Image (cartoon, rainbow, N blue to C red):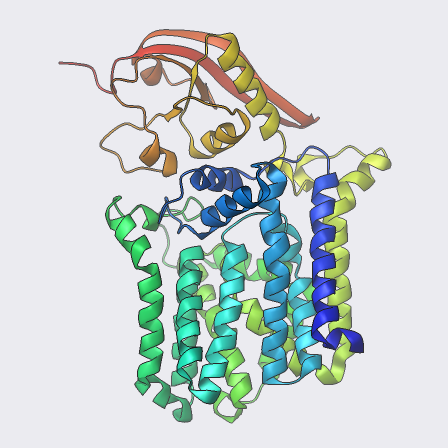
Length: 489
């Protein structure tokens, strides 16, 4: 383990772990793209400064990867976390080493690298991948700026924060961490009077500005409510949502890792008596955790909102339990075992002759979409080069990827209603689109849609059954002669 306290051996291990995850995904049977990944792919085909409910960084990275590899295959998108996560791991190591020593950096890097959440997200091209990289960079440059107050560090902090905001708007929680650190101790309050802090904030805002202008020009599309966030309403507090979020953190950081974090937080001295290093880590770990728990209690918070706080949490656990390091080793072993099981239990069940069931299939959301797409592609060709028409965003994303090549696809988007997804903004069906379409819907087909066409005909359904018990089925109609969303007076 002493060897891993040096940068290059640790980096090679991080690359090896990422390669293992990448290869394990490639060898798995029957997996397709996550619906969100397919959506990001469609975004990448037309790079812009913003998209529906998300900033543009992940689309840019997919676009860049496709240009570098000369391909738009699934494995190209999966190469993004393969490259970025080892870099993020080394930034966590650098932070732990700078705050304490190489041993703390090593343990922090390993706690991050083997987080159970990373075993899943390491094979998904999502906005969290660049977000974690830029958050880690911002932590490192902020601490360097606090130590030396050099313009270079403040400017690089601003760039990291701006790029993080272009990755995911959760980066705004970093400002909450800065505020918690500055207000948490009298000696740090002078930070709020430092003009270089505001220069860094200005640079972050300047980096984000094109996205803000794009969103203003597109009905605030980048700030639409994400699909995973429900509409407000109901009771004043939501204990169940809080318990679900809090319990999920044992799966995000690891059962022993998160327990060690909670134990360490409970045993820490009072904030003002803690060392500056501990207060810094607490500001970017405990303070955001409390904030998100409050949001979950009053409203709702998806489990992955807390992912960036575990960058500081990894360093915190590594230093608090350096004298009881066997517990860190146990945490790493459990996390690694969970990751191996996650990747290989479907193959193990198959080898043992045990049928897979949806209730314990962690991959059911990413099975069968390729088959659905290929069937839709075949129907569009067999029935006269039809154009694709859908009425649901995630279905549209998967079909746009797997039913290629497509000619001017459309989505059902009645005017007068706020857009519910990117496709209702980018490729809505409008009057004048009177040609023949292949309408794919989850069914049963809505009569009010069918009657808006002069001709409609039922075609064979799209069906995929990755294994008994998991079936995807969509109704298919050939529709032609769109008359408009509303009857003519």
